[in-house]
Length: 303
Ligand SMILES: [Zn+2]
Image (cartoon, rainbow, N blue to C red; front, side, top):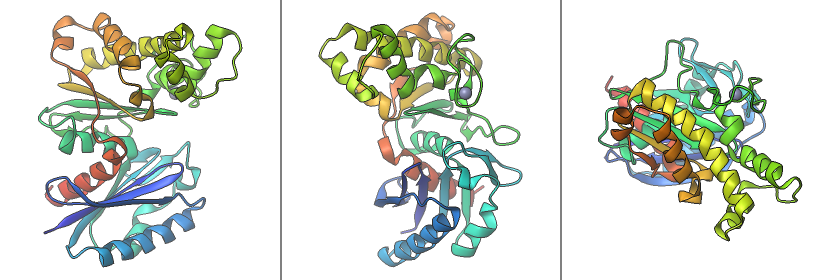
């Protein structure tokens, strides 16, 4: 049976695996992200050898989800805020030296969206938006059954749409981006602002406090949900998607963030459009990028 390899590069770990034709990962693992690009290429080379040795099946293609802004024309990462080693690196010739099958590269959040659409909670809808909420906010858009890359490849940067014109300065330099108002560091910042001063430093700690009923912790999540809902309202009115999925570490908080988000999205969008767009949690968890990259590579073979 043919299998497809997926690689999902994160700031600390390179996740990878082999997916069968049904979208199931038949093998998955991870390795620490090397600090240099040469180290990364060496790692990919040795993992590729291992994968081929470990499977009795034929690996038909491979997909790579890399963090950063991916230019589809130059086939390079233009800018990777969290892994600058990738910036402008000539990916295709270098990976091509290592791999002996067809391969594709794209942005990691796009790959996660593709994975959820092909094999996760987004199955069955033609248009889908995925937001991954962690230390930042990544996004990916599927429109009419196709990954929406945009004219240069930069589409889906939902974390950097402005939801609060007078808001916090984002890592990208713009003020009031969704990421600056609703990602994990923003939740911590909001919590500190409510209490004046606190020693709590992670969104996870604040989540535990919210679970225990602490009003300031619940309010911090509600404020993040308010801005997230504004962002989703824009997406609903703009794209009329069949589903919006929310994934990433911050979404493990259950209803705490989801409920205020959905409420605000309802207030900020056309009733008819909101009614046909369920807002749900993504289902593939940490495997979304690996499965998406593999599924994207599989789709590339037949396009
Ligand atoms: Zn930004």
